[in-house]
Length: 103
Image 1 (cartoon, rainbow, N blue to C red):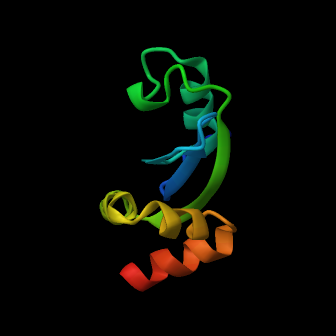
Image 2: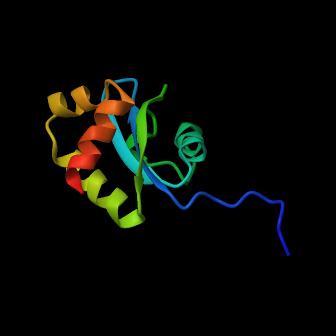
């Protein structure tokens, strides 16, 4: 039997959020818009790091592939300098190119 309900994406994304104090928060998810709304709500599902740092802006996101690859990319992104992170957040293409060099 074929279901008409949309299937959740199996692709994992890495996303970067810019806070009101101009800091960057990086995370991974299968649904960027849902996850960003959770962060904006400030509720239990939002990251503690972004709570109280509103307004938030989704700086950039890109598809990474598997959950494992997304977590590895997030880990490596968090190790970068602030200047390097800022450069990667200029466009989605720059972030995609950087992710491609990892794998």
